Figure 1 (cartoon, each protein chain N blue to C red):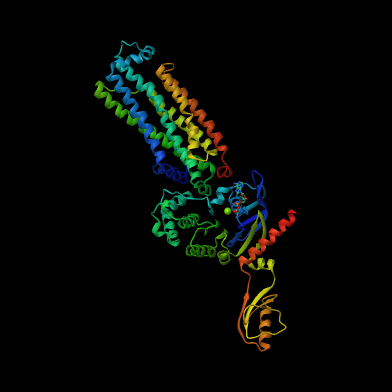
Figure 2: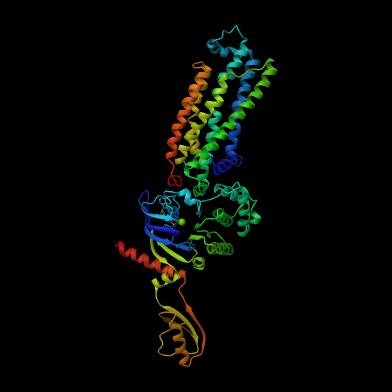
Length: 262
Length: 307
Ligand SMILES: Nc1ncnc2c1ncn2[C@@H]1O[C@H](COP(=O)(O)OP(=O)(O)O)[C@@H](O)[C@H]1O
Ligand SMILES: [Mg+2]
């Protein structure tokens, strides 16, 4: 990254605040997934004891026997360490893809792309700067969401149960590997889509398909088919990282001045 | 080193549209080149070819000895381009836009700010510099585009219709600025429809029609392509009876001579014949007249060719 690329990146990141739609997605999705949803689950478990019955099947699958620990604590741990991480992955996907759709197709729509192309930055450098902008925003939003979630959740837990819950190692894998990797996949997919797309919506739609595997992951957590742990997440992260690298490589070749200006 | 050099340059768009057809021309440094032609003639396409935005379908071009298709980044460092679709950011102010584009060209922020301030002042945008672009009129945007293209002090400016949408006063202002730039040695490649302004500022011309560059040269050369006669308008009490002329008004006559050198002879003849002379003016064909007659000629020729 040279200073010119940094200038472009900064401009892209700052422009979030000028686009209402982008800003709304950036705020609403994390709010729903890291504040509202966990809070609802926590309140259900702690205040409506019967609801634990719904999770009985899940509890049975856990390696620890139910008697060893308080069932409520077990369930809360399950929610925090298995269910929420799966939901959480939507945040980097949404944030990065909305950001890159805006910074690639948005520029095309507003006829500012051509001006950028006349700059002394090569296509590859422009491409890198825009990817970095999407990635930075994706990660920033993810990490801030996580911090906000932990703060709110621990306060709620403390008042409702009198103790706090320490997140498992798997969160570290999510934040440091899976989220960055899936964010890059989302960017690569959006960027590839944006080569053809004429509007921001079209470009974003490509990344919507990434939501389906995440939903599958979420459902598998609820039904207990495949409970995530650090190892599974590590594997998933590596697969995603490889996929991201392959997609990026493919997308880069697609860009020529002529194709971009169409 | 030539500023621009093309050799059989052609561009066929996907779909078979031959937008630029085998054009060759040379441009010296410091020239103001008026690239003229009706809509769809291929002017914008040529600018894009010369800046590496399009790959030529045939032939070659070099700008300051750089092949735009091979080395666009290097060329962009020394060229400034204004086209209809090279817009700036609506959510930023005029000043912030200029600073952003300045930094893209590797200038530091303080330099950019200084240069932007001077350019905004020069283009009558000083009052609007903190206003967001969304509140700019078309004319203000055009002028800001010119400032943007000049932020990195390019050696060559490609201006695609820089005065379209400007009121006469702003257009005049922009033209003066272009002339100043040219006198500082900047080469200007100017596409325009406003022939009267073009005649004021251009040193050479290229006339395009349907992808063909059918005439190049300075105005004298173009004029000689239309007609090698000079029309002299004379106001005199009387003229010799055997003098071939066209009577325009009571004492006004148009007389056709072969060159300017013949004008003194003409004057002597009238005076010698006892006529009182009140006014003598050589009526040169304007660029506009030359343009239309050459375009007509070209149309006729291409139609003959098509038959
Ligand atoms: N991207 C494109 N794809 C196909 N045809 C194009 C494209 N851009 C321009 N053309 C065609 O090429 C011709 C020349 O266009 P252009 O260079 O824009 O002319 P001018 O700038 O002189 O008005 C026109 O017939 C136009 O329709
Ligand atoms: Mg044009």
